[in-house]
Image 1: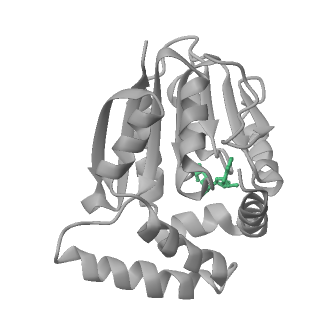
Image 2 (image 1 turned 90 degrees about the vertical axis):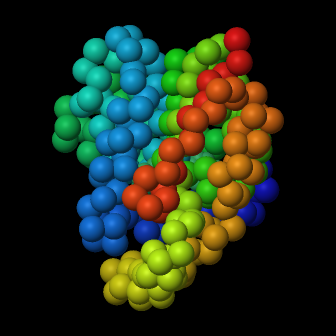
Image 3 (image 1 turned 60 degrees about the vertical axis):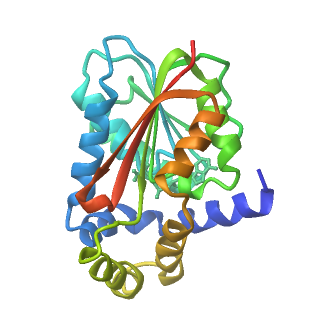
Length: 235
Ligand SMILES: C[S@@+](CC[C@H](N)C(=O)[O-])C[C@H]1O[C@@H](n2cnc3c(N)ncnc32)[C@H](O)[C@@H]1O
């Protein structure tokens, strides 16, 4: 990974960590919880299966998975940002999942686990921030067992011509302005910029295939504000 870029991203998330969950709920009117629930349902974790929640942040996905799949195996919640993981640890502790969810400081471009260590992996609103996206996807694929699944939940740009202008106004103007009262306005200006720079679904499917993933399914949610991209590691 480009060290400087990685450090900038880490610092940005360290800075917004204290208000991260609150702003997610406020700025998405709570719909972000539904997107994560949907993604976790898609994961369909079987009893004993090991799950990696990469770029876990404050562990909303890991906690959701622990609740939804009580018979599942260990869940590793990995993230670059110590401040995000500190909040994750508190939430995991409060929810009584300390035995099940294991927070780890790690970069997506260098995942500190052996090949095939996980049955499934998920990265929610994270891959967009990974500086070396190609390498990140290769690493996520490497740590899956053959046939294991990767689910990427990420923002996308809505295609509906009527909805797009409303979305753009909200996302590019109103959201950073409102977020600025509670947290770093710069970080919430970065959000719409990074979404605009994110590859189209077709281009992202190609990146997933190049990383070794197969049978990719892509499902837009809520007018295409976010998309689920799901693929399987080749056997
Ligand atoms: C927008 S948050 C998403 C957090 C969480 N998955 C969620 O659904 O709310 C993005 C997270 O990605 C982490 N991150 C960014 N680049 C990373 C990388 N290269 N490796 C690991 N984590 C990374 C950040 O620290 C941050 O916690």
